[in-house]
Length: 219
Image 1 (cartoon, one colour):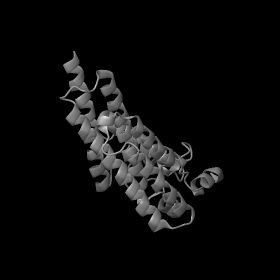
Image 2 (cartoon, one colour; image 1 turned 90 degrees about the horizontal axis):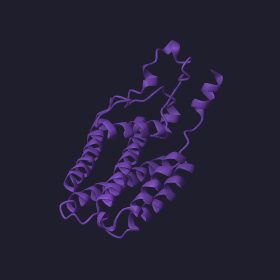
Image 3 (cartoon, rainbow, N blue to C red; image 1 turned 90 degrees about the vertical axis):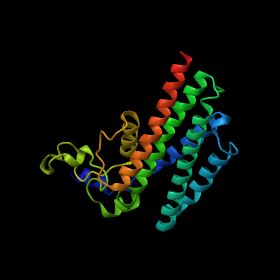
Image 4 (cartoon, rainbow, N blue to C red; image 1 turned 135 degrees about the vertical axis):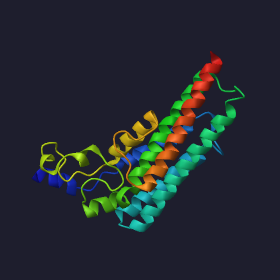
């Protein structure tokens, strides 16, 4: 019980979210030129440039600035993802992309979709990671995670006393939604989460349908 409490009171590590942002930038560099809007270096550079003041504002306790920068960088990656998916839709009828290259590009965009929306869920749930840590509330205000459904008197047995979600939990939610086109692990409670989920599923479904239609065309 004591060790569990110490784990809960410990600030949430943010290196996983930082790695996700850097992975999105790296994936953007790996995409074919036809699927990138603007210079190929623009989005990855903006991600890195925005990450620096985001980390600094968190370390110095400037919460409002940190939240604004976080929303800006999340919005930037979302717009870049949607633009690349739109370019993929436009490029499909022309058959300029080789089948294997198209499959590779679609897979990268699908993976980007998972990470982009995992970052949104992590950033917005319960006011963000900083607020979640300060309020020390059990569980989530926007998602019904399995740990929240364990009876109170049994939570110690399953090591979920005082449990709160971390980035990997939101990543799993985003992964399952992109895979099954609907919530599976954690039902959605907040309206904003439902709206973002619909957008994420629509993007994922579009990518999968495009890849299937191209595969049928090749066959």
